[in-house]
Image 1 (cartoon, rainbow over the protein chains, first blue to last red):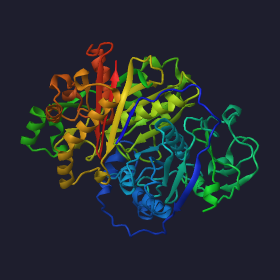
Image 2 (image 1 turned 90 degrees about the vertical axis):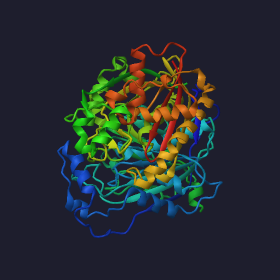
Image 3 (image 1 turned 90 degrees about the horizontal axis):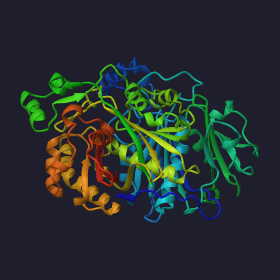
Image 4 (image 1 turned 180 degrees about the vertical axis):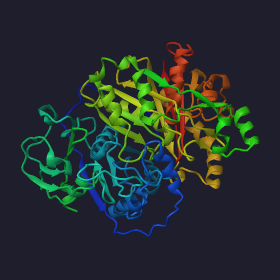
Length: 287
Length: 310
């Protein structure tokens, strides 16, 4: 059970700023294709009813050509790839982040994932913020850790490539083109110290106040047409297009930033919003 | 300390549930049970309105938001349904544009189903408590469409309504409704039974009373508040009968539970306790210093309770 009194505002956090540490990570991209589609799926009636109010029709051809792996399956794949978690490693908070909703409307990923984990983490989901949802999820997870005295966080990012309704044409950032899930196990040992190197908002000088100039950069697909970023030491990895939520975080796993911090950043052109966060990944590199 | 500083709601016109009897697949006997024992005579719905329009109606009534837009750092939509809109549609973007809140970080909070509203309050308070700006605010919206067979009712429990709510959350303790304690538990056995099978429904029914009482007691303990100190309970409006059972189990007089709206709203997803807060305040049912409890239960299955001081 999660139980708490109201969070208390601490106007002057003590100590130097701290960064979350990425300690384990895994990406799951299932092989294509899925099982052959059988028209008349019971979900079709639900899609027809849901789309009617919004003038959207079920796109059977697109649906049949997709993987049709539920978000729970994808999340489980990433968890399996992450490997077993002991009680000492068990996350205290789990945030599921996604850009595109699951085509399966009878399952809740956060509840199902929690069932697979040791302990009793607080688990929930953030969405409807395009590729920026994982950045919000990380921020929220750290703030819960700070408030509750936790140190182990699990961020599960899912791209659901199977959509019942016609997808926008590329190069829209909302055009999710495949299935993927990324599991990121992080440590936050900052206690009440301020969280460093993380912000989101309209691009501008003020947004980048905490941008660490010595960091390696993992660039989300949206940064291809982004306003100017602050000085950095070049891009270490770039996300592939068509994975609005997981792209940047899958690319993060390919980076050897050495002992430098790593900035993950992405820009959502439609929202004119940019988000970045800074992580220590040294422990991941040494595994 | 988290507080709700202003709340507004939008209740569409009511429609007798008898008009939905065929869609709800209710026999005449079941319909009478819903009406007489569950207290579900009518529900508020606007079949032609989209989710975005319904949310916007509540938000534009929030007069306290006007002139304060630049203070709003976060816009949170508390959501029950995992997939309620054809992707990539979202209510948040048009809502933020219409309200002049494009500068705020906006996202949906979900997977606690109908208990996501209370989670959104706690989450907003958590972010605001850490925000560098002590005057920062969060706007929370809730309420959904009951436009599909699966979303218009929970069989043998309730009929869904389309009332919506918008409220401002602050980290300033001077707000009129201060959060004191919160508890939630997700029972993961139901994670893949959002639409429950018969056996899961039976198991959920058995869990319902004890599960709700458990989080109520935990939230009260966190708040340092006794059950007898509660002036009012602002519940999720599923049905009147279930509250008779829970009150008996808790030892709480049923007249302490604000059930006034069940017969005209139905169960409005995450919005119920906040619609009840707006109405109870309007009716003068809360006096300064009163402590009250909000409750929500979400399929999937999360039980939640939150204690406030008015």
